[in-house]
Amino acid sequence: MEYVSWSPLFSVKNPHIDQQHKKLFQIVNEFHRAYKAKENKDYIFSILNKLIQYTEEHFRDEERVLKASGCTEEFFNNHVKEHEKLIEEIFQLNMDLQAGEKKTLNELERFFDKWLINHVLEEDKRYLDFVK
Ligand SMILES: [Fe+2]
Ligand SMILES: [Fe+2]
Image 1: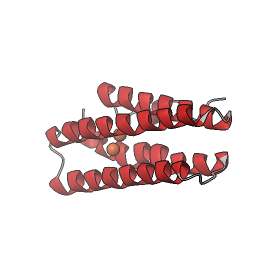
Image 2: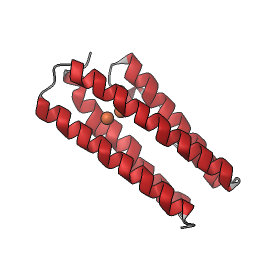
Image 3: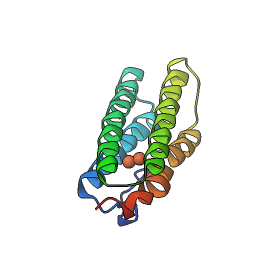
């Protein structure tokens, strides 16, 4: 069983952004699978790095779409702040794991529940009204 599966529930009704979210889900699943299977460290960190890079790319893109959507400045600024927080959190996770901190699968799942799923469901879906 995959950790997260895409469902229409996650759609922000923008095919380009949905596609990117699907890819994020896919990389998180890949990371989860490798971590669970206790694959070799280099491999696990290469996936985590891929996730970080893709996340930065996605946030840049999403912010561009959001900016062009005519949303309020306050909404835009808050969303950008959220993204900055998420980037810090994933950097921190990377540092903790690199430093040899042990995280249970459960802890990782709770991290990504908040980091990925909540952000898409709670924050990204809020721009449904602006982005078409
Ligand atoms: Fe977002
Ligand atoms: Fe997003």
